[in-house]
Length: 279
Image 1 (cartoon, rainbow, N blue to C red):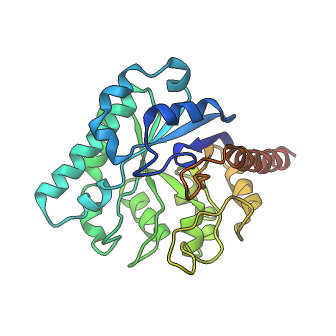
Image 2 (image 1 turned 135 degrees about the horizontal axis):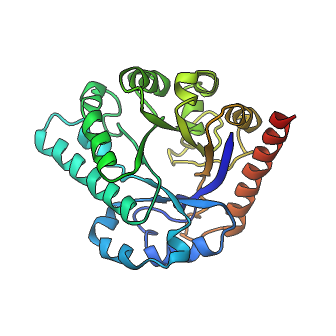
């Protein structure tokens, strides 16, 4: 069943120039949703003390934490020191989540520049990653992110087979990039382990004609979010939906109205799917 409609703080922040925690908290106060996914930016390692005194009204709205994105590539390194650095950073992320009473961690187990070229190295660190999360009493979920060697679903299926208690976060844009929306949604070994779905649209490419990264808002591309919500609502476990499309403009300004429109779009799709499921 569909649970909460969440908003990633990435919808109104950006690395490296829009990561100020106080600005992020201010935007959170202006947005109507069921909770937030906090993105851990690299700059946060230098200001962890700022998280010690978050207002309770902000802290209680943090549901998930998207771990810092260098961790996966470090775990896939051939260097033992890099691997240890990745595990150390994951532990910092997990402890912050524990301190903030956040429920789940979202991990890019692999990532650029190597992506999944050496996926066996990344997979070899899964047990250690799960242990770190367990020690901090948070649920670790592995996200379906782009691949160059295999596909997101094939990796998640392997993880499900080798780690039966594993949990996942699905990303609609990245699944669509690999033409795997239905592959993931129809596979209970994947969807049945899913706790959160990231909502971004897709229209054939992650970049524009100038090579610039593009983020489509839900409804701007070709993904059938009615189908996504239908599949999510059909399962017994609770699956949260999280807006990830960014509304940060090129000049750094934030279109809060666009963020709210996106959240309303997701909420409407979720309600329709839930009503149909309930008959």
